[in-house]
Length: 372
Ligand code: ATP
Image (cartoon, rainbow, N blue to C red):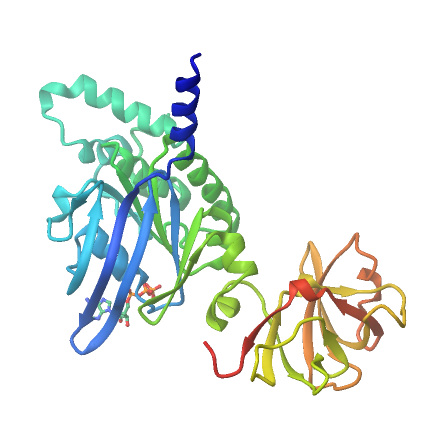
């Protein structure tokens, strides 16, 4: 290989991928109600993006705008470099899966999938081959002649997925596709969906209100609240470094501790002190950490930045014990902790027990009072 070849291939590897889908300044009203406000979102080719938020925050409306099933009042939608914001749905290159499967009950599985191909009758051989290929892809070979009513919910959703992928679209849109399924089926299908999306390299946008689902499946999560995107980031980022109190609370379980900074610059909640200072001028804030960030210590150590807590309640969650603790020095300050079975504090979590706890300062974030 020549030196220049090497350099060119290196550049190709590090060159940023242009965004495949760009949503810029999109807004939407229904009557006087503002449902979406200045939405900006950039999606790379092959990325799996989840729109996550509580009911009514506008995530389905945003998905429907991308699909052309709803018209935005302002802003642009660009896909593959083309402004698609005013095109009818049929001229946009996507497949869509709905929560309710939306299959034709009077058509067989094969006919439901073939419907999306829209091939003329004379191309029947080619159509049948493609349908067989798609059904194999979603692990439904052998079910060609079944009707939707003869399938389980999970199987029906696989048919809907095969139909959405039939034309090899440039974008896969998923509107709560797993939420009507039982927990076990949902977990399996979630994994399969992710594997399939990776294998096909298709760009996917999924609406969900289930934060666990979004954390498990997405490359990028856009957390929405009241018609706005509060934060866009990787699952780790939105979980570990939430940009706002809303994101911290909505994604996972959050501990909130009112903290004060004394004249010596020590920040503490009760007698639990933290190794950070507040920004100039701020004297109080709300500290935030996750339940697994609090350590239940097996032994008290005076110099170990520990404080005593009282176990108020314990719930068994399978992989962890989740306990509600209150600080012995001020029982109105309460914390939720998760302790796994192989951790030393596990057996100490018994209601009424006094336990030493510590929190590593780098795991604590804070929101200055009055800020978002
Ligand atoms: P959910 O998870 O409950 O589906 P969502 O976050 O997907 O919620 P949207 O369905 O986008 O929310 O709805 C956002 C807001 O817009 C809601 O207040 C809803 O009532 C309203 N809305 C949605 N569609 C219409 C419509 N066609 N006409 C009037 N209001 C609408």
